[in-house]
Amino acid sequence: MRIAGLTALALLAFAGNSLLCRLALAHQLIDPGRFTVIRLVSGAAALWLVLRLERRGTPVGGSWGGALALCVYAGAFSFAYVTLPAGAGALLLFGAVQVTMVAAALVRGERPTGPQALGFVLALGGLAALLGPGASAPSVEGSGLMIAAGVAWGAYSLLGRGARDPLAATAGNFLRAAPVAALALGPAIVTGPTIDLLGVAYAALSGILASGLGYAVWYAALRGLSPVQGASVQLGVPVVTAVAGAIALDEAVTLRLAASAATILGGIALVVARSGPCRVPPQE
Image (tube, rainbow, N blue to C red):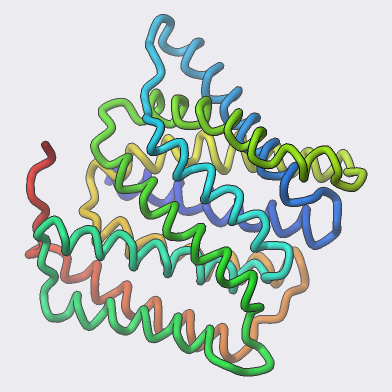
């Protein structure tokens, strides 16, 4: 029950990230470069403060690998949402996450059962249907950026599975990632357009609540999930995001998006329901 609760909280935070980013960019309240930097800086500040208040003297954890994966994910995520609607972007993001994490599980020696394999194929089929040619297909540039963000997030999740202290690990990753992102996106920040205070607020909320604290919860949940489970449960996020996007942003839920979401969720159900026989080798 504890792992289930942590997982649910983390997935709500993931959906919140997509909505906050899309709200800010769709209304041109901020540019994607500044959104990324404010998100990472505010997340780093919040995590450092929580760590200092709760556990004085506890060193930060994480790694440079995790920090770089976080930078790539956050940057590609923001620039992708310039053109992608919230629901389609979330579907692409977490579809790429699933492919990355399941591929890593196969390399590590985990072997899915027949129903799990079928569920994985169904989920990929749903993504392929979403990306196929047609008037309602998402933009090619935005889709490519979001897939890159998904691969980076999958790598970040895999790096975090062995974290003994999720809060310290997440804090360390954010503290490393924030200055790297500021340097990498420096030109875009300096030459960017004037930003609205509401856009800054959305980016800060994304960093503090949906990213920083949400990722610490996710790292804690990952300790009780196999890579296949971790990859699959995240695909429930796009459905929540699409519904919330339709309400908050008046985005259309197209037949293509609905059919893709239904196929992906059907695949998730097969993977999760049959997750028992699937085993992961012990962590080093």
